[in-house]
Length: 226
Image 1 (cartoon, rainbow, N blue to C red):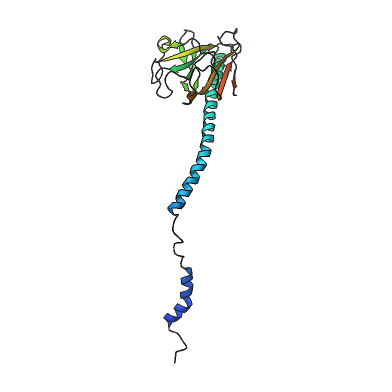
Image 2 (tube, helix red, strand yellow):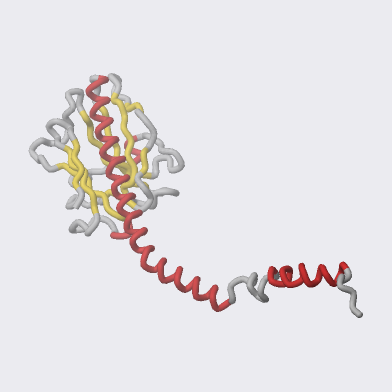
């Protein structure tokens, strides 16, 4: 005759055993992705990247071009303001580096302003401002009418950081009344910026460019984008 009361161990098995067994995770449920699944995910990301990268690159190129034109326009505007406020001529120098560690060889990619003292000495008003590395000022007169005659660093007698006098530059001045010493016979003085990958001294503007125009009579600048 069986006892109506089950032993404690048997009773705990019947009461708790089935519940505990049901709480156990299914076999393989906690396993990670298979190699095939990982390869599929990587392939999807690769396809997405192939579509997005050109768009990102285009945005970055446009941003560099706008940044370069803003740097150039702001420096020209500052030179004009300083000439008026100081009642002195302020010279603008646009540099073409012959040897340039960061800006490339033989390209117009930097600008600096100088106050012309009563003694005739040119005193720098600030440091050299460089354009983004991917952008240059076209050196041809077709796209940059201001770039005609250039002076060497040795002729100018001014040393630049890192390269000394190994450069050429174009110079012009803002006068105390805000005008420039550029000839008013030519009302179209301008500098055109574009991506270095397009080349230099182009016969016509590329698809992406930015032009900074200077009015010789009042010294004001305007930026044009296509």
